[in-house]
Structures are given as C-alpha cells and as structure tokens.
Image 1 (cartoon, helix red, strand yellow):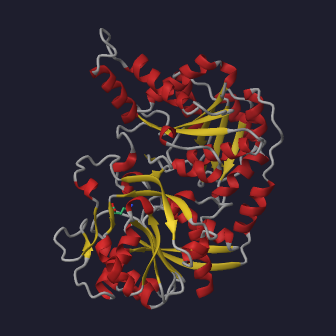
Image 2 (tube, rainbow, N blue to C red):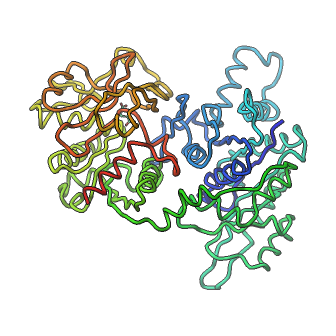
Image 3 (cartoon, helix red, strand yellow):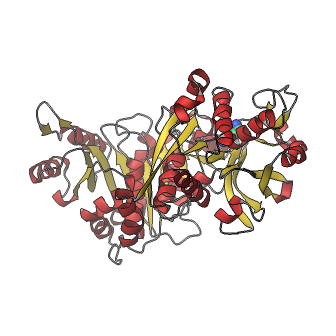
Amino acid sequence: MPKYIFVTGGVVSSLGKGIASAAIGKLMESRGLTITIVKCDPYINVDPGTMNPYEHGEVYVTEDGAEADLDLGHYERFTDAVIGRDSNITTGKIYHYVISKERKGEYLGKTVQVIPHITDEIKRHIKKVTRNTNIDIVIVEIGGTIGDIESLPFLEAIRQLRIDVGYQNCINIHVTLVPYIKSAGEIKTKPTQHSVGVLRQIGIQPDILLCRSEKELSQEAREKIALFCNVDKNAVIPALDVSSVYEVPLMFAKENLDQLVTKLLGIKSKDCDLNEWTNKVVNIIKAPTKQTKIAVVGKYITLQDAYKSIYEALVHGGIANNAKVEIIKVDSEDISEFGVLKYLKNANAVLVPGGFGYRGIEGKFEAIQFARENKLPFFGICLGMQSAVIEFARNVCGFEGANSIEFDKNTKYPVISLLEEQKEVADKGGTMRLGAYACRLEAVTKSFFAYEEKKEISERHRHRYEFNNEYKNVMKDKGLVFAGTYAQQELIEIIELKDHPWFVACQFHPEFKSKPDRAHPLFREFVKASIERG
Ligand code: GLN
C-alpha cells in the first residue's frame, strides 16, 4: 500500500510548493523509492486548457493528452514519475463528475453534498494514480493558500484520507513564509504561526514545516516556530532562496529532509544519492564555461510563468553544452512598433514559441524573417512553426497575404488550415490535437541528426491548425525541408531551411519532454548552434 505526503501552502501564494513537491519527489527517488505526484487545483475550470496564460501561466500537456497545471512540468523535470491525466485534479473536474452521476440517478434518493460526496470523489481521484503501478509514495500538492474558501473540500479530503489509510502512512508538509522585516532587522514567525493555526482548526496538524525565507533561520527562531506550531524542532526546515530551482533537492538533503520523511512514514530505504544530479546539473549551472544569448519572441513575455517549460528547456540545452543561456525576452508587439533590429541585434539565436490569436503575430513574422535572412539560428515551436511557414510563403514564395485561417479566414493563401475533423468541433475544452503522436523523421536533416538518427520519435501536441499540404511542393521547390511527418495522416511535423545554419521549427511542443539532466535533442542542438554563431 502506498504512503502519502500531503503538501499545503500558507501565508502567501507563489512560495514554490510545486518545486518543493517535485524536489521531495526527487529526494525519495534518490533513495530508490517509486513515487508519483498529484496536483489538486481548487478552481472551477475542469482544466486550465481554456485559461489565458495571464490568468494561469503555461498550460502543460501530458503524454496522454491532458491540458494541465504547470506544476506537472516541475514534477516531470525533477523526477521520473509517470504523470498523466489523473495527476491533476480540479474542483471543476470533481463537480463535473459528481453532477453527471447525480443526473444519471446514481445517488437516487440522496441529497448530494460536499461532505461526503465531493470529498469521497476527491479521495477516489487521488487514489486512482496508484492503480496498476507499484508506487511507494504519492505526493499530493494542494493548490491555493490555507484560508482560501475554495480549497476547503480538498483539505477535508486529505484529513479524512489520513484516517482511512492509517495515521502512520501519511505526513503533512506545510510550506510557509518567514518574512524578513528590513526596518526591524528581524525575521518574523507570526504569519507561520497563524497559518498553522488555521490548518489545525480544520483538523490538520503539520508534521514538517518548510519555511521559505530570504535569511537564515536562527536556532532560536526554529525553536520558537516548533513550539508555537506544535512540530518537532528538527522538522522546522529552512527553505532559503537559491539561484537555481535545481539546487532545491540538494538544499533539502542538507537539512536531512529525506531522512525525516522516510522515518515519519516508517519506510526503510537506502541513503539518498544525489551525486549525479549534483555533477550533471547543479555544478554546470553554477560554473558554465560558455555563454549565449537567445531571444524568445512571444506575446506573454511580461508573465514569468507563461513560457515556463520553454525557458527551462533552454536552461537544459545550456547544461548539455556547458553554457549559460541568457534569455532576452522580446514582446512581439514591440517589434512591430519599434523595429526588429533593436531587439535582435544582440541575440545569438531566436525562438518563437506557441500561442493563440492574432495579437502580436506580425512581430513574430518580422523576427523570423530577420533570423532567416541573417542566418541567425531559429527555433519555432507550434505557432512558431506556423508563423515560419507563413513568413516563408509571403516573403520567399511571393504569396502575398498568406496566412493561417486562425487569423484570416478569407486569405487567398491558407498555408495553415484546419483538418476536416476539426471543422466540426464546437467545444473549446480538450478538443485540440493533444498529447503524444509519432513522427517519422527524414534522413539527413538537422532534426534527424539531433535525435541521433532515429527514424521515428514521439512528441506532445497542443494545436488545432496544421500545415496545408496543398503548398508542400511549391514550398519544397523554394527550399523548405519537410523533416518530420505524422505518417498516419501525412501531417507536417517539422520544417527546416536548406541554406541556413540552423532553422528548425516543429508543430509539436518539445519543451515538455526536456529534463535538466536529459536536455531535449532539439533544444540541445539549438543552443549549440547559438553558441557557434557567437
Ligand atoms: N494557435 C495554433 C493552433 O491552434 C498554435 C497553437 C500553439 O502554439 N500551441 O494550431
């Protein structure tokens, strides 16, 4: 039977609960244990797929095609856990399920209530991830901050779950903030005391506190927190700010968090071994021998989390090349307004990520044209590939006004169009081409060599529009290379340019499969090309 670690957050949001959960997962794996991680999100959307990145940050896509919370990306980057559709539970998903059951008459005669019907369904959904696998530990991260009204059913569910599966088989970890008040020159423990107080009122006593702080916690402060929060003083773990998130498992290990967790859960396992992670990831991040500057041209640039996996995959590409990647964030609308040179003149390479809607698109075309004409390494992802096709159609093939029918339904040259099966789709949620699809690679292309001469690869998708095959021959004649295809439907997955040092664009999202110690091949090669450009 698996054991459970419940992770909650208090005081403020953005404390890095997702990273903490992923790092705890990493620690457990480094002791030879098999883990999985589940994220509970208290919002009413069934999934974040229909939310704007400004609301929610990046929408992460799993192998099995779920549109999910970006914390699942942290889980996959830090661990080898199998993460999928069932790894993200939302209030919307649970209510949708319960209400459908009610309509079918499955609760006939009963009043359907938050307790027990919603809480039972939350517990069942959490347990679902342990089906068919030999999981030692399930880490359950509860989104939101203690005190929020909407997370209460999730907290009640984990309180009950501990009773259901046995007190000794679960622990509660609470991530809190211990602020440093500059004018007083002191750290303050009161917000943590209050947050734990609220948790205890709803029946949850934390076993471990992870105290986020910009200053070292004195022994005295740790003792004070322990006393007021009713936890062991060794279980008050400082979680100081670090320069790279990939250092967090090392920081926790230094505080013996892994020993504490396994001891509390009564698990016998080998000692934690993070040597490989230290050597292959952290040491390189701390002392890279090279550096490069890569411009990311998008429209959600001001929001840190909107392109989370892209930024991380660039860091991974840097690690693979022993290089620090400095990311120049460029708002594509600024390019339209102030000209491309201002933003790209110092870049060693350009990346155009995915996106939706017309706003900002023309600036992306300008950035792509600049990269194509100046032989600057270019990497286009999803909308980035579609934009590269449009730019090529307009400026190389002479198809004036060529476009995607997403932006111009009446364009004379619909080089990006909709598949017949998508034309009928009315619902917005979960109806795109989603999740892993196989892609056949063309020999002797940049992609083929990046993937170490594999004939077939598999990558994750999230898009509705596709390359329009009617334009394949004319574009091929003009120098566009079709390097990857989804064979079953002859859909173009990767394009390249013939006479260019590195111009690769893909319809799928490679960023979701990159890990710090296993950089995605296309990111690795893209960063390499940017370094060579110098
Ligand atoms: N908007 C485009 C489509 O739906 C691209 C999507 C994306 O970049 N993820 O096809």
